[in-house]
Image 1 (cartoon, rainbow, N blue to C red):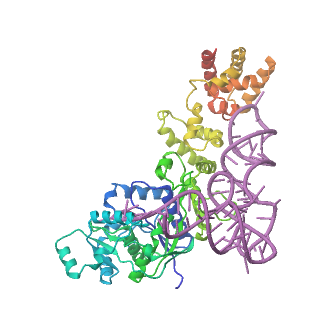
Image 2 (tube, rainbow, N blue to C red):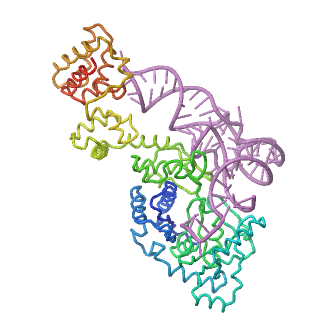
Image 3 (tube, chains in turn red, brown):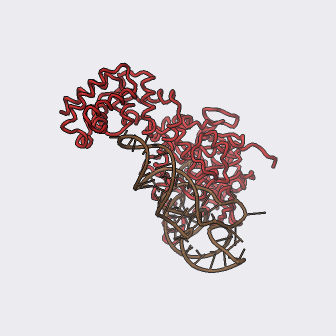
Length: 485
RNA sequence: GGCCCCAUGGUGUAAUAGGUUAACACAUCACCCUUUCAAGGUGGAGAGUACGGGUUCGAUCCCCGUUGGGGUCACCA
């Protein structure tokens, strides 16, 4: 085959949110496409009417968009292989299933769910290892089928799995995987409501949309032989498969809702940057082979290859994600952080206060390396946005002695005499007071920090003073003196 | 249970044509810096590569088996 540009697809079902595992699948598809100048297709697999969720498709597209993974083709982007929503392609699946029936590769089945249930129980009791449909309806005559169809009996269409040679799945990540056809069930292709199952729909669509590489989660590996069979029965070229390792909980089971957040929306809400989440998730199952851990999306595109994708599942380790969020935060420029902080402020109790860009960027500069998230500028640096109301008990016990009010009183007077002080001026003034009383600077620094911030940790105390400004500092010393004396 | 996949420190990974004191990052601990908290720097602890057999002069790496874990067995995707 002449080398042609790959076409890949991300094919989620619209269940209401995007799973982080789905995000990684989408990312790898996207990276592979971009790396090889290919096309990234978004296709919506909404063939289960029972699971239909209002607005899910829109939110899926929105979240993908947030992450920066824009589909080249899809329900929103359009394209010449549409429609990209499976519920709009019912006639296509129907046509193809009819073709299969004509070729005896599929057949009508009128068995009731009751019969199926009985069959399952019988097989179970007989010690069968798995439930397999007994091809009961395969023996129906053409007339019988015609009559039942005319009578409007409930029916499905099943894949007619032929016994014979092993079914081979060539996987880019796992190599050759073999399946015995005896273990493959006559999978339902068209449900009684007329909708196709995933198996039929994804094969038909991947073929029609000229998908060259099917990159999806490992949970699909066991059903891949059914898909291979379908390609063969249709006489179609089989795409390349790449089954990605699963994302795991800390107990190594498949990442699930019960053990933490799985929706990308949850991570957005918690304040994670898209850059960090993408960076993190990219590293779950893939590495470039060098020691780089920090990546932007375009660097990932540059370095990504399916060959370097890991085979074993990867535990989703939130600590590392937090670290990456920290790293990405450190590298954001001041303007962006100011605007992010403003958004945060507008959602907080400080929404009615006003702060200048200059003030905010000074706060950011002072707090930056002490926070992992933008919202922590407010949580950890609240004293830049309001005077402390309470004072940390532990620090108070440790640093607030009988003499302290006297020292601070003098410090207040000294500060008051300064003109447009910068941090060095505060430092000099404090040194002077310490000398006058013949005490260590610590006797002043710690209570002063407590008084202006209410807490014992944070940026250098002189930085805090400079940012707060002389008047505010003096005011805070005065109120604290009243409250703590 | 059948079928399938997987197996390097707690976690994510490196060691791709079999030869390394098994490397890096997160987390963790200590020290330095800082009269705070972080960040940063330095160092430590932590895996003899699940186990057992082969093949080989030599296996993390190749083969077989065992064990363990996971996935999947729907008219869900």
